[in-house]
Length: 372
Image (tube, rainbow, N blue to C red; front, side):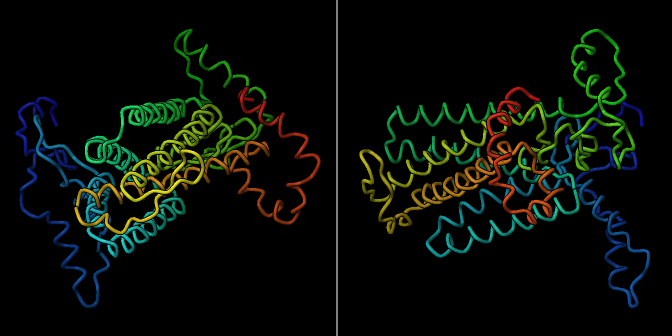
C-alpha cells in the first residue's frame, strides 16, 4: 500500500494485515466468525484456523491514535490491567489478600514455565516488571509518603536506590547486544571494526565449533537463544523479566541490579509495613511489623499494605536469584552450562566441595570481572 495513504488515516483507522484500510470499530472479522462456526459443527471441520483467529484478534486490538490506530499486543496489555486490579482487589480485606497473592504467583509461574518450555518470545513479563515497579513507586510517593508521614531522608534513600537499580537493569538490556555473536562481521567502517575486534578474536579461536541450530562456527561457551534467534557468548539465561539474554557483557550490571533491587524492595517493604502496622524493635533501630489487623479499614491503607507485601515478595525472589547467580559465578559456569551438565553434577555430589572448586573461586570471580 502506498505510504502516503497512512498520512490521511483518522484516529480509529489503521492498515490491517492484508494492507487494507480498516477501523477498530468495524464489523467482526470474518475469519473469527468462520472459526467459531466451524467449532460448533459436528463433526468438527478440519479447516479450523485457530492461528488466523488469534492473529485477527490481535490485529484488531488497537487504540485510537493520531495518524492511525496503534496496535497493542495482548501479552503487553494484560499486565497493564492485571497488576493494578490485583492490588485493588487484594486491598479489600484479609481473605482477598490471602487468596489473590498465591493465585497470581501460581499464574506467573505457570506462564513463565510455559514460555520457557516452548521458547516463546513475549513482552508479558517485561511489561509486568515495568508496570509493577512504576505503580509501587507511585503508590509510595503519592499515597504512603503523605499518608504515613515518611521523612525526607527515607524518601531520598528509596528514590536514589530506585534510580540506581533502574540504571543497572537499563545497562543490562543495553549491553545485551554486545553478547550477540556476529559471525558475518559485515564491517562498513573503522568504528565497526573497533567494536567487533573481540568477536574477531573469538571466531579465530573457535576451533571449528558449530552451532547445532544456525550451523555457523561459534567460539567456545556460546549457545543459541531461540527467543533472541541468535548465538549468545557465554549465555547465562534469557531473562523474560527484562526481555533480553544475560551473557558475557551484561552479567555484571545484571547481578548489580539484583543486589540493589533486593536492598531497595526490602527497605521499601519494611518502611511501609512498620509505618502502617504496629512495629517492634528487633535490634537498635531495626524494626519489624507486629500487629497489622486494622490495615483494611480504609482502602488507601489496604493498598499501602498489599504494596508492602508485594515488595517483600519481590525482595525475597531477587535475593535468591542473587545468591544463585553468585554461586554460579563462584563455580565459573553459567546456568546454561549447569543445565547441560546437571546429571554429571548430580552424580558427583562431592564435586561442589572439592578442593579444585574451592581453590578456583577467587580466579573465577577475577575472570568474571575481567570479562574473560
